[in-house]
Image (cartoon, rainbow, N blue to C red):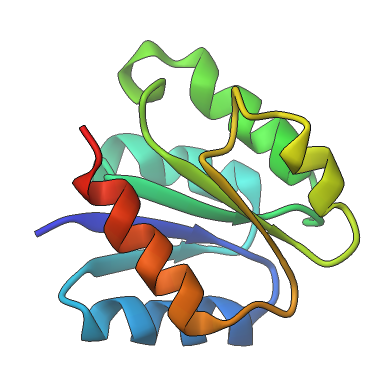
Amino acid sequence: MTTILIVDDEYLIAEILSFALEDEGFLTVTAGNGQKALSILDRERPGLIITDYMMPGMNGIEFALAVRANPSFANIPIVLMSGAQAHLGVSRPDLFARVYEKPFEIEAMVNSVLQLLKEP
């Protein structure tokens, strides 16, 4: 079963995503910031990461750069979600497989996850 790491300081968004993805048969792990998420990576070995942009300590781009710096995680698809900074993620296709503006359709996010995990 594939694990998905959800990184968002907004508890309700993380929980809603978690419930929707668990309904599709995924395991989910949540973290409220990038530092905590980095500490979870080795233990959980997620198949995909969904991260917010604006978080305490490090933003979504800084978090994605830290993930990509570790060769063990360099190929994990990362999905960025952001209210006002989505354009910054769109300009970084080297970091993000998909970018969603908040608010987003939960069904579209789930479909993206399903598609990304099917891609070779």
